[in-house]
Image (cartoon, rainbow, N blue to C red; front, side):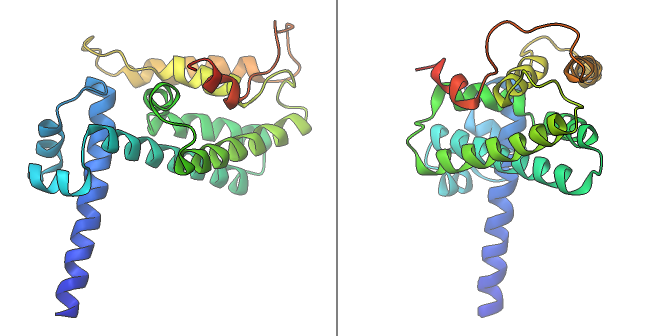
Length: 210
């Protein structure tokens, strides 16, 4: 009985993770109003299984966004720990964050969720801290211009990787990677121009939607 219980719990965990992964891709492709029946179909589970894990669309989108934030923060932490060169760590993080579809999730987080939610606050602080650490290291090394902040980086990632629903654009990632490289070249020090305004923080981005 114990082995069966463990197996059932493992199956439930896998189902939950698969639903979150599929829902992330569905949000990118179809937008946050995607049909939950379609998410269940793509995940290979019944509707009852989906609703057993997530009471409604809002809860599912919240969990997807928190998952993406956690995974993105982990990418930043791994890049910082494993890359000897400071700008290489930043570059690695930027390109890997694209794979997490961070551009699709950031607008949802800014516009939809209660920022007094403890889980949202915890994930936001971890994400901001991990990206700040990468940027601080590159700025200290003189490789990253010193007039930008975490918010500037996230705005660029969001805009450059924002999905284009309904366009039928095949191979969109190849354009994203090309333009991210151009963006990274513009971040390198010494700066070739003086930016207007002050460096942006994640708190500044949240304030835009209040």
